Image (cartoon, rainbow, N blue to C red; front, side):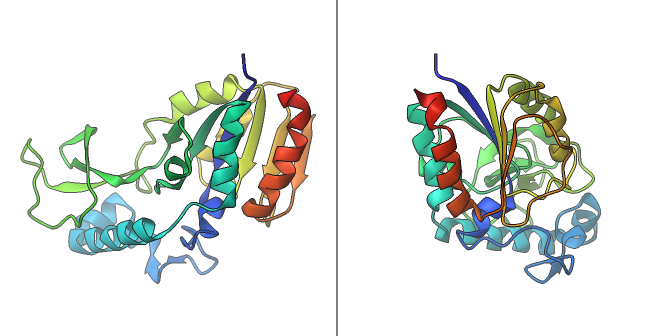
Length: 230
């Protein structure tokens, strides 16, 4: 049995692939107030703006490539049972080769009807006003917006509980409920936190902080895990 490595990733891991972090210091994302383009209220007010925004994000993700951090996590699958819980909507983990990826906040290459949050459809093109799902509802990105519930949070919590080793990479741990996943970690489980600006978190046994960008910190993580791999 391979040791079970659970990894929580955030925007910082994809920033090094050229994808902007969701919340910049000025509260804008690509020049937009995030609540205008990523909330039910924004959708009600101006659905065309929301669709245009995510259509652009989809093109950005298409153009981006996995970086050394994504590739490093995929390589760890050789010696570990790796499960990634990501707050990111891109597919860079999958393209790097990671097999088990749980997307907490949805996926940019999926869409769903406004009438049914449980069924999604693949999308690689632009979504427009008037594009309807089979149930007759307007199609929208299958993304969890601010103010919406996170349907996979319980599943993610169960994954964290099963960890032999836990790592947090490229997240500020300020967006809940994702940030609360750390609290499900069993006492004594080794925990590694990697970010160029380390998030504040409760001190715990076996906590290792690596204050580096994800692409550099992954090398430290791989080295630290060598003793586990045997």
